[in-house]
Length: 168
Ligand SMILES: [Zn+2]
Ligand SMILES: [Zn+2]
Image 1 (cartoon, protein in one colour):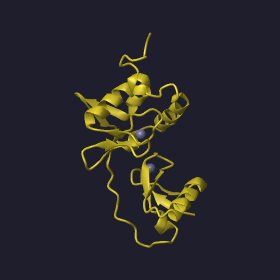
Image 2 (cartoon, helix red, strand yellow; image 1 turned 135 degrees about the vertical axis):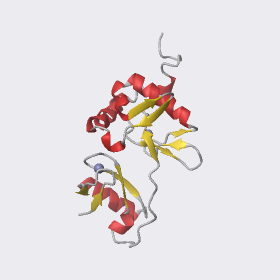
Image 3 (cartoon, protein in one colour; image 1 turned 180 degrees about the horizontal axis):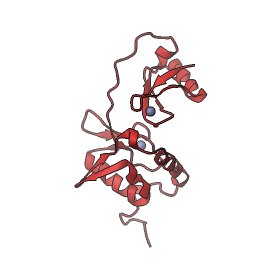
């Protein structure tokens, strides 16, 4: 049984069977750092498959937490991360934003579409900030995951509302 500790809510938990399987798979693939979700607060928890599976006994250097905001892409429960090269990206859905203004634009679009998305953000003037990640309610993530069923409809969602094909 593998254990992990959440850095946000300090919960020490035993990984689910699925998480454990994924960790074993990643260890076989040589992955040093892998992300699982805390079962309580849904924060990202960094685990080290090679260390857990006994292939290596040195943990890699701590991965910096670069999360700045919840990802504003439909059905994505990932986070916008501040890349070193001044870009922003979400490792969960692969979206890349050239600057923070593009992220803000997507946040405004997603809130227009799904009002509960507001629960993850705080508006300060023209800027958007994140609610502390461990203060985001569980139902937020559940709602976001349910957006999946509608993803086909909102494929190319950024175009909607901006004129093209939105209304006849
Ligand atoms: Zn947690
Ligand atoms: Zn994303």
